[in-house]
Amino acid sequence: MKSLLITGGLGFIGSNFIRLLLEQTDCEKIVNLDKETYAGNPENLADFESDPRYVFSLGDICDAKLVSDLLEKYQPDALVNFAAESHVDRSIDGPEPFVQTNVVGTLKLLESFKRYYTAQSEDRKKSIRFLHVSTDEVYGSLVLKIPHFQKLHPMHPIVRTLLQKRELII
Image (cartoon, rainbow, N blue to C red; front, side, top):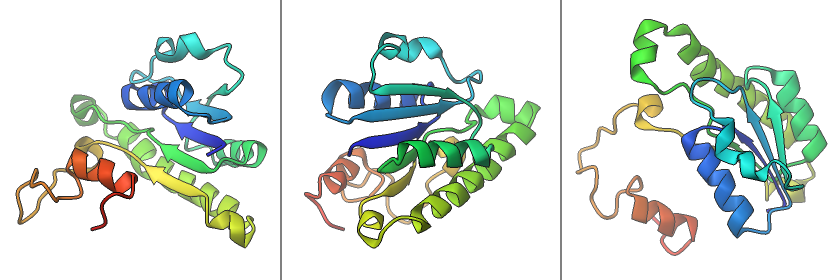
């Protein structure tokens, strides 16, 4: 992949993903869109501020124009969404930010990405992706008839890794 748009990249999971990409891949451009909420820490990626492959954009995933502008400008191969409100105690005290980010924000991202995707050539459409990454606090508990960590369950970390490497097909 040449270029990625990462949302929520100052959070724990997002910043470690960006760090991994910058340290271990030949990705040409990583654009990090983050609102800098309580969950984001700019210090997580401070050592990459001068890296020409890294671009930080302060903003909200609910801002469809900003997201569309970033997609248009950087033409990413993938949009990876880590942006989420995921602290349960905060959701009890004030649920509106959780609905805005986790539901409305994700919808705005999907709509912007759909417009971007639709405008691409048929060949390009085959190679671009939208990935939504989050936790059980956003997705909810995993309720299955089989045990959560059964070896061939798609949510098991080892199985996910093998699926990503295309070494396992379920």
